[in-house]
Image (cartoon, rainbow, N blue to C red; front, side):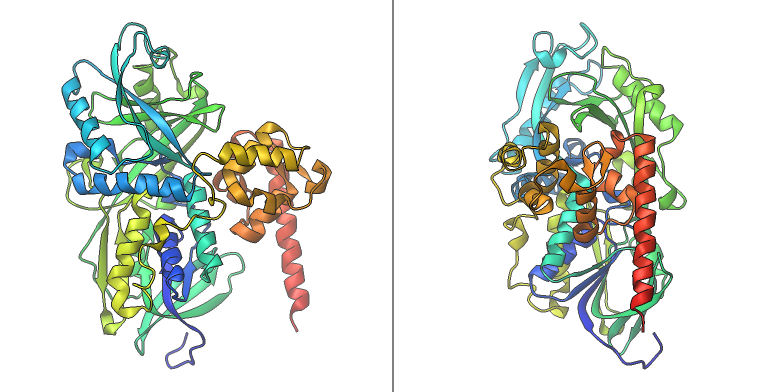
Length: 518
């Protein structure tokens, strides 16, 4: 945008970054009556926010680093998030075996006592001791090696769907959510932020004007500041890689495990997508482009060896059916080791020329809602209505989540009654993904044929088109790895067919656009 060019719509708030923090701020701000635009250079949740361990938790291990405020805030948020999104968040019990020679049993018991009591737990069951020699949860463990353990509560989340549903709710409240919209320049002029945005699919450029700007670029937060904001940030980001592997189902019960390693790290083993087991994570400093992160052979071997020390069934790299990695943009507190770096978030507000720029450092999935509230508190002098509905996001359900926390199976049963052509597994998957909005997607279908083309693994054309129209899906990867995890079940031929279908849809869309031009 040229200096002195006329300004069209002026947004109250422009947000750069479509991860959980950016979408959370967009939702809260829109719900308080602000005009909001959010720009994400790729797909929503395409970075750190889909590379997590899929937990909504307090962070038991952070107690060792005296992060009591962070743990308390996260524990309070744990049940709040479960209530507003019970279709994509569900409670789980975690088994912590006592490993002789590592942390003593009394220390584990003390930590779990604090974990139970500092966060206002109301719905989740408390910690208990387990006899691993007798209880079924001890059967998958190495015989005779672990006799005592503890079982505690946390929650498991579909992290990418949490981001997408948060964005969907923001859009339903008036926010303008733009994916494949890369910010190439930010400039301050006449008290407004002027943001140049490039459509990464077409190459076309446009301009946005806003009174306030939020930099929620995650691992790219410092690069965003270099786009012309004119701000020398005092905070620094520390990039830490966390990698995960998925293998076939390792045991029959529904409990998860948290294993201690001799290097001081912990590894989670979590039942995943009914037929699989998720194992993670690692902690190591990362350098380079965050877009290129992937689980290394060394990390995969480390995770396999870590769980094989505890389990009777050994896990080896050839057993891995999928691996993924994320780069956590942690606030750099100078910790000597990546595992000790703080998970606290830091919000840095700058006002060059009187126009606010808020940069977000750190944070975690569990505390995104509170981070958004704190962000709007800092921006309150510059925005309207920031106090009018303060705290509303703790009570308003995310799309599809307007139900009791135990109602997901009931939703699945309702789908089977209303759409008897669905299989039980298909109905359960739709209930868990879309909650009360599943019927909106199925509409008046009477047979499977009405749902259009079958792409495999219960994915139909009707669902794909819904994801395109309502959830910003543009590619096969958007559908099978972020809005679902059907990539674990689809064959290579199925995926190739879906990719070819998307290419045709994209080309058809371009033709329609060209024909509509005068």
